[in-house]
Image (cartoon, rainbow, N blue to C red):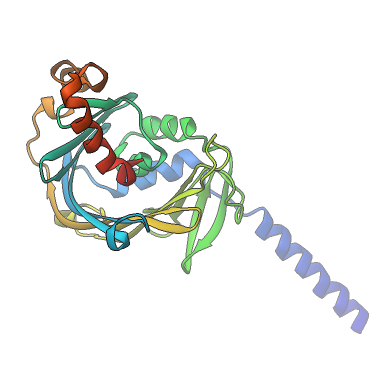
Length: 275
């Protein structure tokens, strides 16, 4: 009889494991659609925040900047950072990007960390799927994992593999909580972004994170701390017009020689923060 019970017990264990192994997991596109729905119907969002930089090369190892982010859904973004005497503007519209410092065009591409906004910006599933695919996230791979005591959908990797680009979505709230880029994407540093402390009330940002942390090879290098959120503010089209900004700004290479040193100094002042 004990043998019979043992066989039954073993059979139940195998059956349970088989069921768990074959448990249904939502496909990536459905997970992303549910995530987008959670953000609500806002047309624009203006975020005033403090950007904190951590770097031993900086004075006291820390630097704080005031930054304003402008979101126009489903696919337009603008960032403005001001320091005494200088202003940095970055505008992104789908595949077009321009970075301007002190009225000079200094770049037309995004760094990996610039893509922190993608999960918060693209409010159409197709746009977000295309963007994540371009970043090397394999949307055919979805698994369940755990992060800070939360069960998460891991899009792009088989948990706990963190060696490839991937997205973490909270299984219960469908809020984005993590993004890994870099490994397997042509860059050596493993870069991770974490989204924390979501507001849930629509009048407090419709679910915008209060803190966004940036890690490089496991070390915290930057943090965004939310200050004020404005929903559905009227934003002129020209704020997001990449072509207009390019036409009204001068490429740094064409600046007069007398201005080059000043421009280069301005670029270096932002280099550690945004590269």
